[in-house]
Length: 104
Image (cartoon, rainbow, N blue to C red):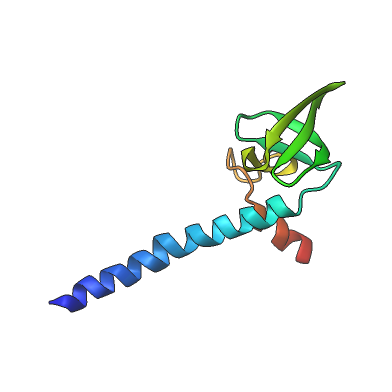
């Protein structure tokens, strides 16, 4: 009777928990690799270029001479990931797809 429950927990781990942890790890790695000059998209949808990197915050230039200070966790991803024309219809290319293309 406990066997189906154990199998269900294992399946949930491999289908839900493990991929989410990997995604979080990739995002943390991305945030730690941010540097001056990188173009990023914030969770609010703003696009800007990093001017200054501090421990927990970034200063981002969103327009000429318009700089805002944001938390690093507000960065959604690199701007190129969202601004690149979609290959398959309206589907946004994933970060993993870009890394695979660079390696090939």
